Image 1 (tube, one colour):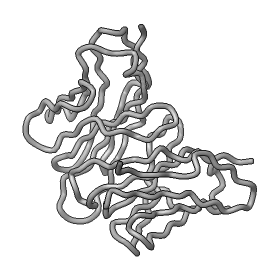
Image 2: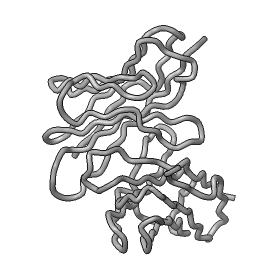
Image 3: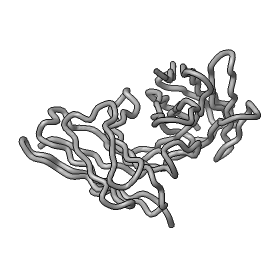
Image 4: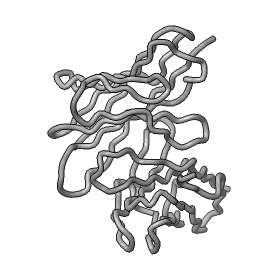
Length: 114
Length: 116
């Protein structure tokens, strides 16, 4: 079954700590995305990648970093510079960046502060 | 810049009654429009999309949506609601352009509560 796998499902961060959220897809999609979901605010784009070894900042990239070394993988690091990291993080993918096809989503990682 | 408005935070409907979840959008040029559903602690699931053509779009689980260009609306509908339809619904828009990255912009979501 093709899909997107996010791990872990729940993650806790201590002060000053960097944490990495995993996102893996076996849909053979070129484009991948990271969104942050806060109650009442919808989804906001953090970073996106249209092809391997390339990624671009979205609307709220400060305090986050990503890499795209493999087509299947697009990990997100929440750095200590992100002062309000508590949120639900969603990874998505699509066939191409300019496709009219829908984005497919993983089941998210909920990040909380200890 | 494009935007999406979902004017109702919550919609309440009795099982078996028709439901409507409203969405209006603002975009330069023609839009791609999408509806997604989210169950608790899950990701978003695609329901349906409008790209071009017939203004009435049919999607998954008996949902449909009507594109109205003059009113810039894309309301989600279902003739007979089920308790299992209770979830958070998101409308999203992207401009139809062939150059450059065009991000998908989401509304703030509408919680649908279907009572037995």
